[in-house]
Image (cartoon, rainbow, N blue to C red; front, side, top):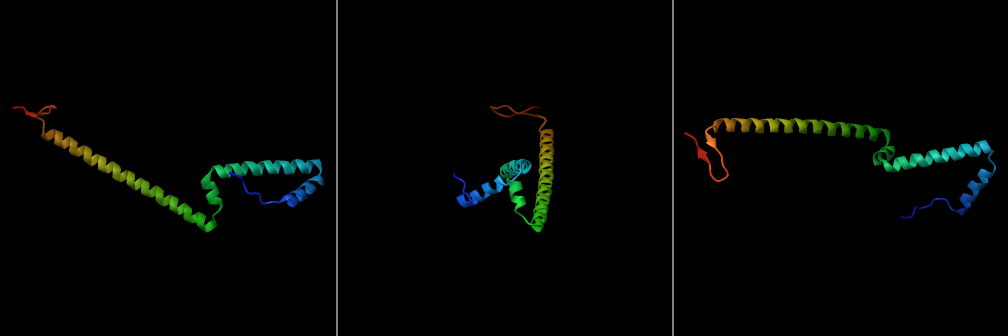
Length: 114
């Protein structure tokens, strides 16, 4: 997939003319700034959530915070319900095993002991 370029040849020529007038120190600073921007852009593109959050206004960031908090609370509640369900199932198994102490289960047929 080719990237769309926003600057045309004339604008790149202006940029080169800008660079020609810079002192060596300034050119080094511009180069360092470019490297930082490239790294930041790469980091931002690899982390979708960062890219998404940087596009939001402050009020939207607050809404996102509240939404994430609500999701965490829902997961905690779901975990509690799941643990409670497993506990009830486990207790039912123990109770049913206790009632059938005299039953020996074999794959071919059940047998009741005297």
